[in-house]
Image 1 (spheres, rainbow, N blue to C red):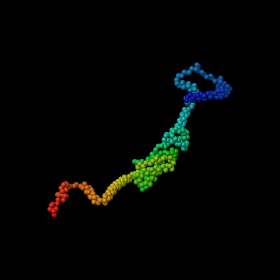
Image 2: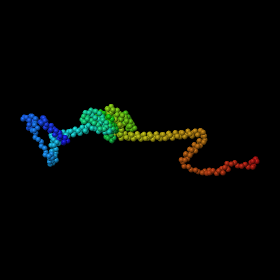
Image 3: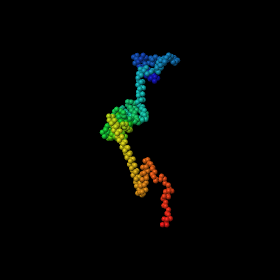
Length: 365
């Protein structure tokens, strides 16, 4: 840099020196007209001194070296010839300004929205993109893949988000909305505050849906259907606004009565659960009794069919089976009465059963 500025200063000095004609500028103390307005004579300029033998001068210090170098090249450091330092600083600043405001790195999950004098110009894709320097063109980067989350009536907070159900009951609802940017241009220019807009739209959609359901449905199994309807309603409202936002899901974290009556509602809910449990137990017992009665009826039909075929045998079989069931459940005592043989003497029984032989007298008769 010092060499360039030195050569420039030397060239300027040479041009100023030869101004006015081939013999130098007009005027001066050289030859020419007496009034000093004619061209200077070349013989009027004193000859330049030459160093004998072309040997380099003696250099006593580094400062002398810099001074002689400036004299040799016809210039010096910036500022030594009257030029201010701030001009060079301004040049460096302008160069850096062009570099940092014209080249932009857009991430893989981002899109860049370029504005020309504050008005929308274009949307650029991920990668290195070139724009005009600021403030002519400016770029805003938007993450279009990030899942944003908005909490409304957070669980455990002191702020109640009370809504009115279809059966005229108050309900404290806490839920969260998951959403992401679908159109960066609309997201930046259609809404002044996207987060606040999503929150207000969620509250409006939740009130509209809860107003059509009963308290038991909102607190019980109908919470999933309520969340889906709220997400659909929010998407329709944001599309009408042209917000460039996509609603991913709505998750209901809490559906409780207001804090002033929460304990009473808990007792009522507990009583309802106990009553429902008793009803379920009674129904189960009734099903068992009905199944047993149906089995007994089927068994009786089978026995009656056999009874019609052989009444005496069936009657005796039923008697034996009944006595077996009864006697199997009681204590039994066996008493041997007189004349009762504990065992059967088969030979003697056989002799008693045979008739007595006839006598001769009887036969003669």
